[in-house]
Length: 68
Image (tube, rainbow, N blue to C red; front, side):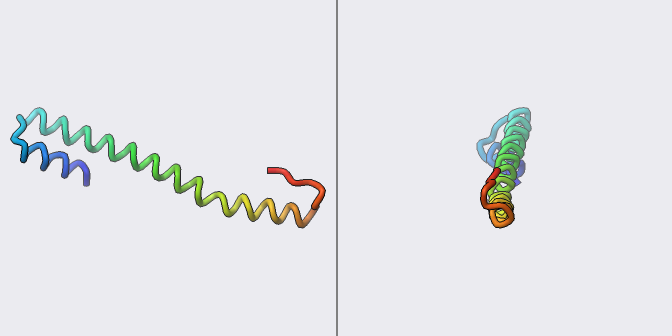
């Protein structure tokens, strides 16, 4: 999606064809980086309930030992 937006904006600004390609490619790279960051954040957030559940189960099994 950002690849198309980058291409359209560069064409609206009447940049030369070589710069249109550069803007489109750079927009695509930035979109990929944002996707990786968001994916990592979602992975971390969704793993927290599982961690809390496992700690609760372990505490019920042996209240004297709580390990993370």
